[in-house]
Image 1 (cartoon, one colour):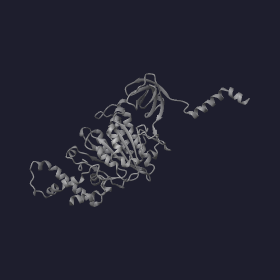
Image 2 (cartoon, one colour):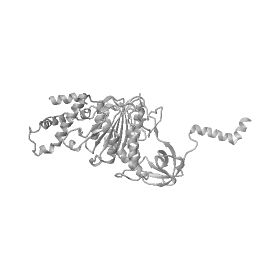
Image 3 (tube, helix red, strand yellow):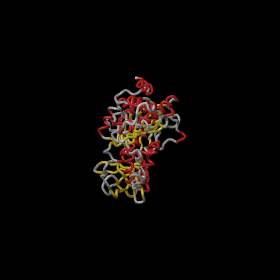
Image 4 (cartoon, helix red, strand yellow):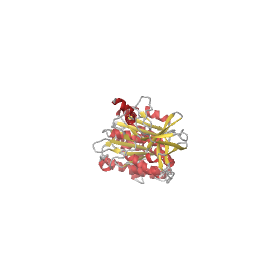
Length: 447
């Protein structure tokens, strides 16, 4: 009798249905109709009070699901920019809220290749899920809680270990125009020793270069590397998200106490993608076509790398910067240079002379070099820089025959030594990494 009366009670039946629904998923789905569609974005009505910037929404188009991210919210609705290159939904299609993006990185991800949505693209099966979900837009560690950056780091590249030495937890930029050897230098740095994990973000790269990088430069470190790939043919949303995914993975490994090498190639293409998204959201262009949010997004992204809290690991960040038209005063390059802990400049004129890596030794700087050099090494590098500066500033005079040997003893010394120094710093990717750059330079000069 009790069971019959309970079955007849509509309130009891509703309670049972709600309990079953809780086990299956959410009771309520927030959504709204698509009211306007462009090639890569759409407007969704009726959801403004329920969504926030960064929330994802999904909808069905041509029998399959498409996902996008909210980039603008106003009184009339929200603007959704898709992760795919084209929005295929029609007017009236219902889009449902999924919430903000998050990842569950796990040590089993090492050796894997994923896309900007955290999906495996290497055909090696599904990814394991970590115990802790991490946001893609995490805040950088608190300034006063971060560990100090002091431990020297050997990159194996003689030019860098001598003139722009790095520390574990430092953030350095590789500034170069196209075709000057930026990717080659990054490949050499990817093989640096002393790291527990390597996280690489290939942003806007050519499709053919991805496999070359994985099976070539990264091959010795592949078993400890996680690679996030978003090629140049993918949407701006994917290219904008790839560095964030890479940083989320690197942060998860850092918080486990690991020393992580993070390589992002390139931050400029991230800025280009962020510009496209911001313009679609209605922001005005203020500096060479870049909206204001780009210049706040860049330091927020870069500051996430570096040392973690005391007692945890570090993220040593190497960020390539593609200098448009070889203009090193480009707004994006200038903003990045002011945020990082140093910059390595690759010069096209040096590359045309056949000197690789084409590092401009006088234009490059490491703000933490003093933590690496001994006093004797610091004095030596200062003298070598002064000698190189004298050699370069008199190059045109000497080519015109306007200098006679014996007139200036210091210049005579520079003419005799600087070409030999340049030759000693030549290093091809296939050569073994440098073990002691100062000793190798001394041996070359003696020979």
